[in-house]
Length: 393
Ligand code: MLT
Image 1: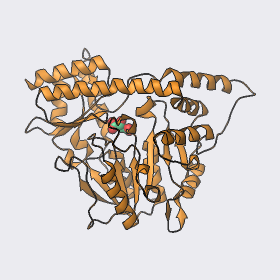
Image 2 (image 1 turned 90 degrees about the vertical axis):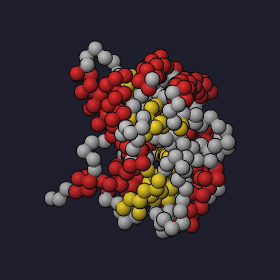
Image 3 (image 1 turned 45 degrees about the horizontal axis):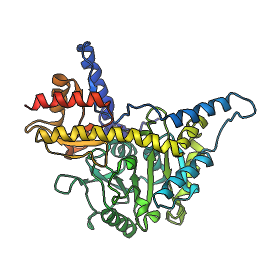
Image 4 (image 1 turned 180 degrees about the horizontal axis):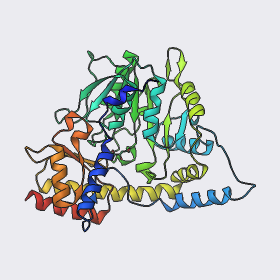
């Protein structure tokens, strides 16, 4: 038996597990302190009442022989797939419900989708980036090319003709930088992919945070994207499902490589390796798209947007360089001069009892930067900013 030695090329632990470990150690050493967590992008507001009511009704159905349900369709119930397609339609994007695959979240799908592609493909990944894109490809032993995202290109790298890649990862609004591609920039990526016979894996997990109506929320707003892109999305940040688990992936029927519809491969993969998301959870997810559900989740998102503003205003007052926060729940800031990301992480934790995420955890270009999330509690975010201000004084 031979093990997959590619795992030896990974860092010892996943970024957010390392942070959780450090925070646990800090808490053990300082039992009287309660750290304010602005690190991992985990939501703090409860599920919307419309979602809870739909889940409770589903529980009641499951408790009765006549309405009980066992295995559901692996790709999700039609009622949810149609609701998702309806959501896209409400933004002027035509998505076929048959191309929608419901899953337990974008993270799993972003990793699992790689099984559809030969290991010999070259992958193009922005740096800094959500570590899952890199780690899943390292596990598979795939060749990775990095593209620089930096202050000069506003953390929005564009395609370069001399760089040849087969699989491209894009995340917009971006995790970790909060940067958002406009139509023209996404159009350049779609053109590149079509010209180079490449596939774009588009992570749209933060689309609901886009406030500027001129910015795209889906790659399918770009002509030709259905021939070259798979879109991943999630209820986690949009509707507080980080613990409930539900997401969806769009594999358009138009996406054909080597005469094969990728949708068929993905269906085959999911029916073989996945048994679907619980009925109760899918009923809750469907309620996100009801009139009441939309109103309620938007009110929650508005709270997070207000948090982002609290953080942004504080940073402005302190003259700290930052980006993001307007169309995204992440604020990406420069560490005090001469300090590495991890040094700033330790300082913030030890002196302010505030947890953030070191930029270098997202890639080499993240060194010297730091990410704060707007998903915290409002009062705690305000306290965190007060403490930050006293630190920077
Ligand atoms: C993050 O903090 O980057 C996200 O919460 C991670 C995730 O969605 O898996």
